[in-house]
Image (cartoon, rainbow, N blue to C red; front, side, top):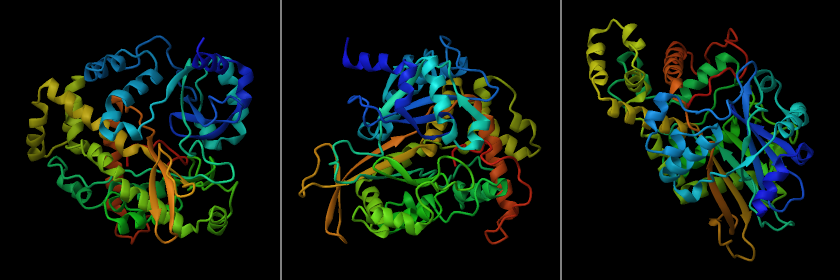
Length: 461
C-alpha cells in the first residue's frame, strides 16, 4: 500500500475528525486546516462540499453534468462523464483553467475518500466556528464520498520555525469594462462603471456590507505599480469578502465569508492591532501592502487572468440569448421586449449554429470562473539572501529586504449552465439599482433589508 493510499484510509475514520479545524467557507464548500501529526498532511487543507438546508445531497454514481452541459464539454470526457462534483471540478481545473492561467499558479489538488462518519464528526466539531447565517443556509454534504486535498497556500512549507510566513488572499473581481454591442442603450452605464462598483450599491441596500468600498478592479489590473498599490490599499481599508491576511496560516484580518464586512475580531480589534501583528514580522503595515503590490506588478500574474475574463465577449446581455439556443426554449428576454430594433439585433444571435452557441456560452462560463476566483500570495523572508528554489522573489527597496513568495489561483469552480438566467437577472438588478441611486453621491438608500445578509448575490462581480 502506497503512502498516499494509507493517508486516504486514515481520512475515512471518524476519529481523525479531531485533526481538522475550521478555516473558512464559501458558497459551495467548507475548508478545513490540518493540526495532526501526519507528515503527509501537514501544510494541507481539505475542501468539502456543502448542501443547502433542505436541498438534495450529492447523487453518488450519477452523472453530474446535465445533457446540455455534457454536450458543451464533450471534448473533455473526464469532465462530461464525471459522476461526482469533485471529479468534475478536478477535470475542469486540469483541462481548462490550468492552460489558461499557467500551470505553475494552479493547484488542482487530489481527491481523497471520506466517509459519512468522518463528515458527520467534522460537522459537529466546527459548528460553533461557522458564521450563524452560513449554518442557517447550508450544511456539510455527509453523503459526498470524496473531498479535495490541496496545499495550504497561506503558508510556505519549509519556512524556518523562528521566522514568519505572511499571506494575502485577494478576490480581484472583473478587471475590464464590457464593450459588447448587445448591451442595451438603457444599460450603457456598464461601459463606464465597473460591475464591482455597481454591485456595491446593491450590496449596501441588501445589508451585506456597511459601506461602499473604494476598491477599483481596473486599478489592480492596470499593470501600473502605483495603481496596483492604490487598489491594495483600498482593499485593506474595506476588506469585505475580497481581502484577507494570514500569519503563519492563521487568519488575522478579513472576513470568514460572512456579511457586513465580517472582519474577524477574534485576532484583532482595530487596524492598529493588525499593524502591530505585522510589525512583529519586521514589516510595517505600509511596507506589507507595498510588498503585495510589488509582487503583483513584478509577476504580471493578473495578465492571463484578465485575458481569461475577457473570453466574455458578448456580456451576459448577449450570451443569455445564445443560452436559449442551447436549451431549445423560447428566449425569455426577447419575449419580454417590445423594442423592435433590439429584437432585430438579437435575431442574429438566435440564428447562430448550435456549435457556435455552445462555444460562446462555454467561454462565458469560463470567464465567470475567472471573475470570481481568488489569488493567494504567501511571503517569507529570504534566508541569508538566498531564494528558495521553488519560489519567486521580490525585493522591497524601502527595507532593503528580499522575500520569497508563491502565488496561486484558488476557487476555480466550474459554473453551471443552469445559472445563466440567474446571471442575467442579477445583472439587470445591479444595473437598475445603480442607475436609480448613483445621483446620491455614493450614498444609496439602504431602506429595506432586501433579504438576509449573504443572500445569493455571489455571481461574478
